[in-house]
Length: 220
Image (cartoon, rainbow, N blue to C red; front, side, top):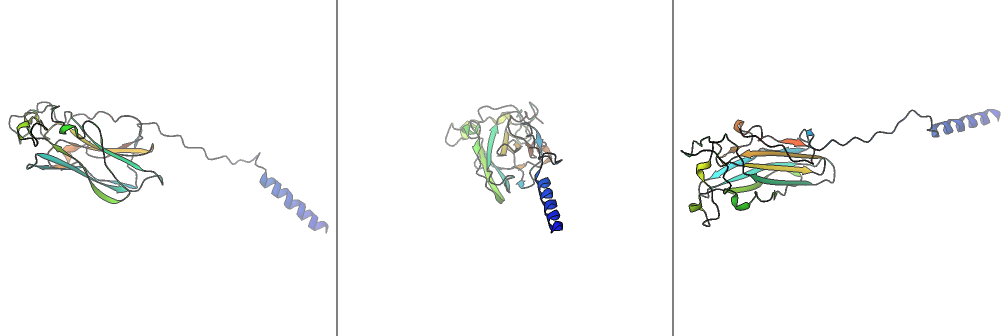
């Protein structure tokens, strides 16, 4: 009987000791410190982002831009926000000639603004999780005024083209909440792929923590 009482008291003491955490060496797991906005990140392993592909169509005097994208969000339940913009800026050295347009000299053509499509406000790209899908980003229509349909809607000046065609940057951006934002761009209006050597470094995806505007992209 005494032996059983001794064992019972010992067990109670052990349980009390296990429940007492005042002197425990265990510490709670610290909450990770959020990375500051603008911090560079690698492409999420669960994302698949292809190069922007450009196709010039002489019949419509326009260039179509497409991209493949797919995968799954990093955080379950998160949603993607994707957009495309067209920024008119020098992408070639000022005055450089487009071999396809004799007499041209690269310059910013503010009238070649795609009638405001993609230049006035970003366009939403309806990306969804799943296998990679090819999404149309936008068509940049760039005829001279006399060839515009309807007349006067598009007012591009081919004398301001450079080696990459009309001077502008098409940028595709995907953002997941406050976790990560990845962007890639395409220079100009000639047919090609963002992974082509002459499109680097802007043609490859670059990722960062969202929150600040991306750095200015220098001309080639």
